[in-house]
Structures are given as C-alpha cells and as structure tokens.
Length: 381
Image (cartoon, rainbow, N blue to C red; front, side, top):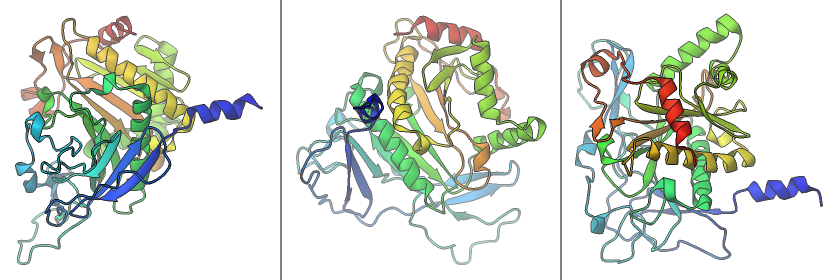
C-alpha cells in the first residue's frame, strides 16, 4: 500500500464529538481522545437552572472609535472556588452537580454561564435616552465557550498527554468553524489565561472561545496595517513578517515542517513569542491534519520553554491567544497566528501596566526581543 495514505491516517484525529444540552438549554460538547462504539455521555443535567443567560450590550466609545462590552451580570460569576466546589470538575456526586454532568470526560466545551457575549438578546430598553454621538447601543450578541482541557482539577496544559493536546486542537478548530458560520459573528478568538497573576478565576485547566459581534480593536489595527502594506507592496503583511523572521533567524526560537515560532521584533512583554503556520490560512479551522498534528506538539513545547524561562519558577503565568481572520469583510487581510506571552518579568516581579501603558497605550519593554529569543532557545527540550 502507498505510504502516503498511511501517514495521513496516522495524523488524522482519532476521536469523536458528542453534543448534549445542559438544564438551561446551553449546549455542551464532549471531545473524546478516541472514538468508541455505542452511546456515550448520556448523563442528564438535572439542575434547577433558569433559562440560559442573555447578552449584555455593546456601546461605542466616540473618543477611540472602539466598541466596549457592558456585561454587568459577570460581576457575580464564580470566583476562585475551593477544589470541592469547582464547577469544571466532572459530576461524580449527583448531590454536588457541576457544569459537566458526566462523571468522566476528556475535553468538554460548553457555553459560559456568565458570558460576555450570548446568542440570546433583549430588545432596546423602552424610554432609554438617545445616544448623543455615534451609533446606537447594540446587543452583545455572540458566543462564549468554556473549553475544559481535562477532568483532572490539578492538571496543566503543558503536562497533558500528546493525544489530549491533539484533541484540544481539534476542539479549537471545530468551535472556530461553528461560530464563524454564524452571520452575527465578526471574528473568533481562542485563548487561555493561566495563573492567578493574570486574573484567572477558576484554577481548573481551561480556555475560552469568544465569538465577537464586532471586530476587536487589536484586529482592527492589524487589518489597517495589513491594508497599507498590501497597497504599498502588494504582499501579505503577516506572511511577509514571518518570511522576514525566518530569513533573519535572530529571533526564531523553534522551526517545524509546518510552523515557526519567533519573538516579534517589537515585543511588548518580558516573555513573548508568536507562532505562525508556513501556509497562508485564515484560522484554526483551515489547518489540515498534518498541521494540526504538528501544532499539538509545537504548542506544548512552547509552553515548556515559557515555564523554564525564569530559573526557580515552577509555573509561569501566561496568556495564549489565537488571532484569526475576521469572518466577513477584510478576511483576506487576516492570517492565523498565536501570541503567547507572560507578564512575569523576573521571579516574584510582574510587569504592571501602569501610567504609560494603561493611560497612553505607549509600551515600554524592560528587556530586548533578542534576549527573549536567546533564552527561549536555551531552555528547549
């Protein structure tokens, strides 16, 4: 038999997806590492929940041209519960139900109970005053998924088995595709916050998927720069940046068959690395089997290096976010890439966004991108 199809099958995700419904109508999907025969995840959610939460609203800031989401219901979301009360654990005791009804799972994805954006929207408040400037307020329509990476409360993504990381990549890609197909969604952002230092409210290993009703400010800036680059050179900004970094090599920290990781030339954070596919793809859903398989390996290697960056620090807090092309207008200007960074500038010392960064958006980095890249190469596996 030809070796090509064998290799293709080896890289194909061997798992399965099962969709169920929570007590208030929110969807929950189980992503299993391996497909099994027969029904799975049939345990019902019997909690006395009311209807699924409704969206807040988005308001236009006429001073910056940006949309701000108003989600007052999130003030009461779950905050650092004890391990015994973790809502992301499997439901092992029916008397203590969680957000995941089944007693065991590999990866679970469900609509957030305290969403920033939601598909259920309310109409305008009767008698509300007119907006004095700019467009009117609008519902914060969209989707907010919680992606639970493991049933193990104390696990970390960096330590998960390779097969589990491959399942997580599949969940990212499938949720990106599902939300991108919603005509009310402008872009999809896949991300993970790790560590209480950067505001994590649930320590169970998990990430999130946000489907925004409008293009986010950072994406808007990137698209404008990409448009100017195309008008000036005819090229793709993100593709040309990747090509330049690979050619120079100074800030490249990892190079695979399908992906390259590099520290951006104007890195803002004390630890920062970008990861981009060699092929022009708009989002995670567009990656093929071989690219998804390599991504699972490369991503965990980057997390290992970040964890080793500061001697004597066991777990480095980080934010990991996948920037993807918008779903509609200007989609051709976007290109998939990961931004992985930490605000830990030294053991026990955080980079605070104080006056210059927070007040003026004028960033100052206390190290150099070249030093960051050198250190990330030194701590390779």
